[in-house]
Amino acid sequence: MITIKSERELELMRDAGALTARVLDMLEREIVAGMSTLRLDELAEQFIRDHNAVPSFLNYVPKGEVGVTPYPATLCVSINEEVVHGVPVAKRIIQDGDIVSVDCGVYKSGYHGDAARTFVIGTIPDDVRKLVDVTRECLDLGIAQAVAGNRLHDISSAIEDHARSFGYSVIENMVGHGIGSELHEDPAVPNYGRKHTGVKLRAGMTLAIEPMIALGRSRRAVSKRGAWVAVTEDGKPCAHFEHTIAIREGAAEILTK
Image 1 (cartoon, one colour):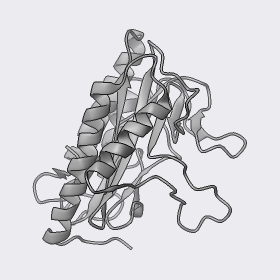
Image 2: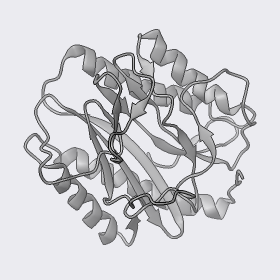
Image 3: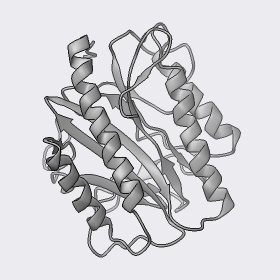
């Protein structure tokens, strides 16, 4: 069921979203080659708790899933070919030349914020840097379509068209989502689709839009041996950006800016 948020609920979501953005701002200042992904996670959890909130992802279990190990960390830290859900650990060291996608969720006053950024560490190949830039552009173009009166897949089509115009692949089995008092709500927000289709967007809907765009030909993110982390099928790099937004008349409001 898709929920329409009241102005009071949107105010609470602004608070959660602003804190989510502040976490990522802090991590952007701190992240360097030689740091473990676990250290990033420790910094994020401490920052969130110091601001009277809790991590959305820590101990998360997808609704309706049985026998799934709860997610064990505050952040998802996914490096290079890892698309999403990279679990921070002490032995995973960030290297010069990596791209590092950091996904963060914050739960505060009963509502969630969810955002992701891909950070460039040191010197990376020009084609990978272009991938990161285009993925960020995909997010901006998707958000530009997230206005009352449009259709859900207007967002999806804008993301897909831009990515494919550069020869990149869209990861199709990982999608954005509705968000609010639950981390994952209806509707699913795919990063591919046909414009003018999907549910009609209404003011007060809140969405987490998150393009995951790959350099190679991979159209799926795959997990191995029950692990949380999902990687590209061909081992090529993937970038990931995300904002939580509210549908408005005229232009979306970015809640995690």
